[in-house]
Amino acid sequence: MATMVDVAKNAGVSVATVSHVLNDTRPVLPHTRQAVLDAIDRLGYTPNTLARSLVTSRTRSIGLAVSAISNPYFTEILQGVEAAALEHGYSLLIADPHDDPVHERKVVQLLHERRVDGMIVAPSPDPRELLAYLGRHEVPAVFLDRLIGVGAEDGQGDGTPPDGTHSAAVPRHDQICAESAEPTTRLVTHLAELGHRRIALVAGLPGLSTTRERIAGYRHGLAAAGLPYDERLLAHGDSEAAGAERATDALLSLAVPPTALVTANNAMTIGTLRALRERGLSVPEDIALCCFDDFAWADLFTPRLTAIAQPSKEIGAQAVRLLLDRLAAPDRPARTVRLACAFVHRTSCGCPERPTPSEKGTDS
Image (cartoon, rainbow, N blue to C red; front, side, top):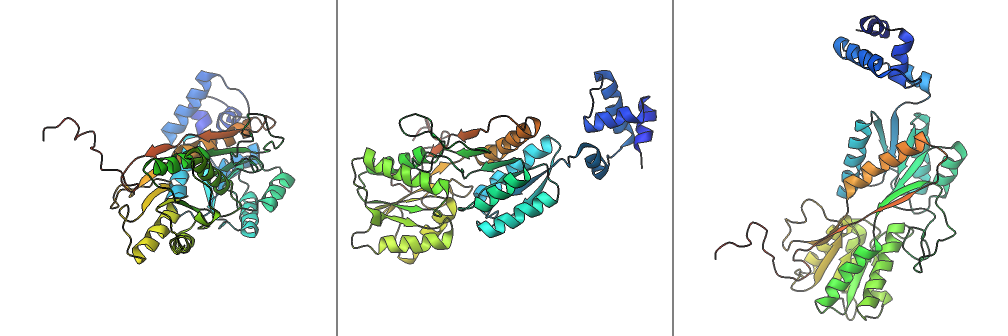
């Protein structure tokens, strides 16, 4: 097995120069750096990661703590994080906090004890212990999907009240998520345009910024359509399938049930569909359905699901970039980044099937 000494001899440089190239501990002339890299390639040299971490105080690893890794949404985020981390030469350690504040604190500590350079976390509904630990140990961290400390009152989650002024709540950590309020508003107004007057929302786990914002978007949509808000038409599915099944059943048991449903994530869409099937109801003939989160098989359902598609992989990739920027400049102001969603118009809302691009313009 080739050693650092072998690389130095092959490149015609000192061992110290090879170390500087590998660890970025001192500027090296471009042609010298390339000679070292060429020697590494020729000899098949593999750096000792543990030894490198002792020199640089960095392990080139990132901790990722997200709940419900089996959820397709978080699976796609994971793919984005992994690809971006690999691109920048970082490995990934993954843990599932299970949306439980106590477990969240434990897994974050375990990741920290593995000496990760920084963390990417989808926070639980009560992140106080998480924040205390990260602050006490000065752990570089990026929050994804769920925002902390901003937009709690107005539901926007970006620290900007509806009048455009800046909120006093300023995030202490970098954060990345998709828009939530406006896309939910769009689903509600679309259903209202189709003639629905009793539109229900199966909302997520209370305490999450995504839940707050999608409820705000739901209410904005009702107001924009001139419809009153009826608290009986808002039920929490707690961001998972079983909870959504119970919430949907409760909504359908109302004296005057809804004629249309909006589900606030893809796991809850599955639970809602189960509840509708148990009651023998057809979508959209008996009840219209729109959902937040698109997923790979949404186009395979009958009917095909009208959905809001989040840029999941890009959220993951940008979380890595934000973390690397933080590692490079620890004192810069924190940033909150929001990405736009796409409205995927299919047929579960009650609209007729639209021709695909390949069908347009063909002879009948």
